[in-house]
Amino acid sequence: MPTRFLALALVVPALAVIVLLFIVPLAASVVGAFEVGGGYGLGNFTKTFEFYAPDIAFTVLIVALSTGLIGIFAVAIGGYLTLGENPRTVAALRWLYRWPLFIPFIVVGQIFRTFIAKNGPVNNLLVNAGLIAPFDAVSLLDWRGIVLAFVWKQTPFVALLLAGAMASIDRGTIEAARNLGASRLRILMEIVVPQVATTLLVGLILSFVTMMSVLSVPLMINAQSPTMLTVDIAFRINAYGDYGVANALGLVSLLITASVAVIYLRVSMRERT
Amino acid sequence: MTSEALPVSTGIFRVDLWWLPRALALGLLAFIVFGPLANLVVWSVAEKWYFPHALPLEYGFGYWARVFSPRGNALESLTVSIVVAVITVIVSLTLAIPAGYALARLKLPLRGVILLAFLIPQAFPNLPVYVNVARLFYQIGLNGTIAGVVLVHVTHGLVYAVWIATAAFAAVDRELEQAARSIGAGAWRAFQDVTLPLAAPGLMASAVFVFLESLDEFTGSYFVGAPDVNTLPLLLYTAGAGGNYQVASVTALLLLVPSVGFMLAVERFLKADVLARVGH
Image (cartoon, rainbow over all chains, first blue to last red; front, side, top):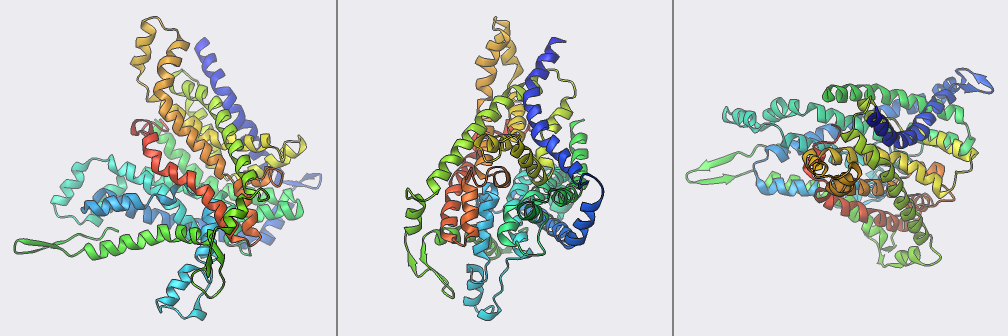
């Protein structure tokens, strides 16, 4: 089959890069997690759970909470863009919501580090508005800061995907439900969201994986303990050159992600068939 | 966001009572989106600013001048970042155009599996991978080199490049190719004169995506490049970690310009017919 050879020959160079520079190092990190001294064992995992159990819980909670909030806001934005009746509000929202989309995480980290600091503009506004006393101003640069930064950055991405999917669903059912007197919230939750559930799921899972990989935001907003696994991995490498525990931490974050990636692969496989 | 717009009928006038909550919601959203960005701009021109003052005491472009002075690192970092990003785009597209064409047009065994393989860098946390890539590169002398950083960026850029290129080629009408073939054009000629120009807007979009991804990439550069290859994100991080928020803010603004520009232009680049074919 000459065309098959041609096709393979065209794909192989790109595939080789992925295999050599991603899949092989990924395998190396899995194997490395079990390397202790010269042999293999579970020593790295004992250390990992001894030192980093709170950070594992912290990471899962932060990423799960952020994913949930991103989902809620994205559905709200996409829903208003699809069902909103005031054309000017819809246009304004469409123009507004996308701005954080392509802002790099490192910039998001720098922005939020100053924006929600103890003497940052958010606290200043609250103090000047008389809502809190100056001495009650607290720094939000802990888990809340990470969640805020993640939600700010990732919501437009999921909302963009959702708005696209919502725009392409059949208007007939929406109009029918509207004529029968259903409220817009009910139309959104019972007619629109179920039809774009796959897109929502894919967007949320991609966001989940992205947030699990981001080093800059937790490093800049909340590097003290408890912190996220990405910061711990970087610390193990930079401070101790300890690849064993770093890889064990990597495997833990890999397993957390794999559990949601499995859902993703199933959905995309089902869509393709 | 989904507040009901209940027009209250009072005789012949229909008074929309919901304009106030709508305006408030939009105003709040505008603050959430632009407040942090405005704060960044203020930081970049703050000459003197300390607690408890809500706004800087002195404004000026002193830090901008410092960043761009011959002794500042910004120009060097900007150059490094752009060189890395341009090479990354060239390498990624050179690999992705043939792969995308094959995936979109030719009979390929295990096509679905291959497409998914290109998604793997997006589907797993990158950090453990970068750590081990850095270890490998250290052994073969690629750590701290432009080539090493480019390779890391290409791996990630291929996700976008291959998927968008595949979609772009799939969106080209087959009949146009067949028409070219039937009047005697060879396979290569038909590709060069018909398919490639028609897929060009989509390929441009993937090039811009890859360029931005490379320009903004932090984690991989942090492990493979630092401190020898000092890209803009690394400069931003070092300045911020050293407490120099002004320099960090100036650098952040430099990184923002291409990102926001692309956000505003993305619809012109990425046509709906290509978007609809991503992942098919």
